[in-house]
Length: 587
Image 1 (spheres, rainbow, N blue to C red):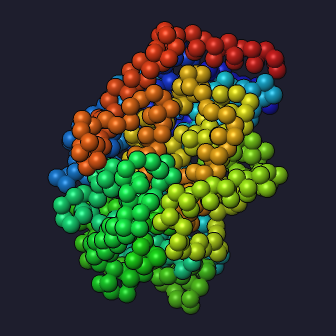
Image 2: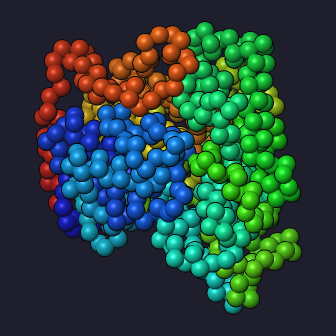
Image 3: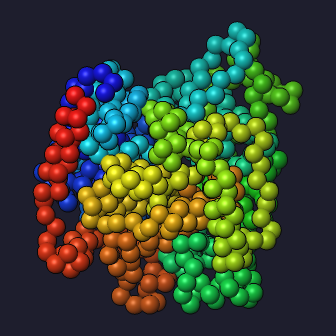
């Protein structure tokens, strides 16, 4: 065991955001005697919505009441007339949730995990930045995709202006208020939000987006035909049916839309219409600067979402950007010089008072050694390349057969100048996007990775993942045989790469397909996925978190029916017994 541990717990949850909080609560619901602790690097509850990350005009993309846990209503205070939810409202909601369910007292704040080790006996040892160590029998790594900023560096020659990452905007409001001209780097949703925030504050903005790669994120229209909120529409099965999802390949509507030429023609018309409405709402044709913000491929950027998908998260989003002093440069920074000059590789130079790097986040796995990353499916083991190549080839053939829309006219993926290190690339090789393959092979049940599926409806997905993880870790549900598990992993990863191009090459991305993902988890748990009271409502009414209210009791009932008796609490004691045994074996 490396060093002396300062404490021991049954379960450690790393992360106090949407995923971590519900993971902790759900585990304690199923095993209330568990000695559980939450560790978080921030100073407050919320994850990406913690106090230090908030700033004015920061809103969620999802409207009220679609952005909450199923059993804990979000108050309407602080929500705009259009239903947009401010970052401050979300922070207050999560803080109240943690207090009401006595989770806040379990959190160790300002504790960045710098190293994760596993002993030969299977226990996990976490080392925190201050040297503090914690040992646990089970580890829930709920850090999420927005916790490890990618901070670029450039050659400097007498350059003195500050450079910050977009995740630190909330900590630098005074600095930003003093700037008159700001350089924004990147093309993700955070770049759009930052440009909106700056132009609304009256700043002149130089927005730098590299020419290659996936380009700007696709931004959906605020509404469809001025009637339906676009993001609300994503929560309906009717809209989800038009997306070719490997998790939804049966039933009348799948066969009608995806297995017939006329169905695919209708689906194509739907996506062209959605793309036209998105382009029209954004006003990409207004001037040369806005033309550079149009996602590619032109005419189908919404469908592929190759660099990701976002939605205007404020009522005056596009109006503010168009009315501001916004200059878009499709280039890259070559160097920084002369106190305040940004030199681009197209021989352009712009002056600046501040640079905000909206350059995204790397996967939060650096605390794990490379050997552990391979063991846990967090990066790809080159010794297994041939095996996985065969599995992926088989999976691609299956996808081409089941989802013909993805077989033809697929744009080429641009990987030139990829800034993400290979060891941190690729969708995880995790069953149900949660459990490492080798953990299943060993029946170890000691670690899981929630929160890394890229979706818009984070609270609902987090709630299902939390219940699935807790049930798995406590031995209440079992995965299928290893061959089936491998096929499931390969099929999903091959699908997300074909479906979302550059974005799918990096992440488990299912932005249009979260309902079919939830359906899959629900069926595993013995929970009824279809929650509406009629076929018409099931297809066309939006799915709200409250539709899943009672899912925990439903799971317990399914367990009771399956086992012939109630789920017993001593499972949590077995965690403690396991930890004592592990400690004794290597102390």
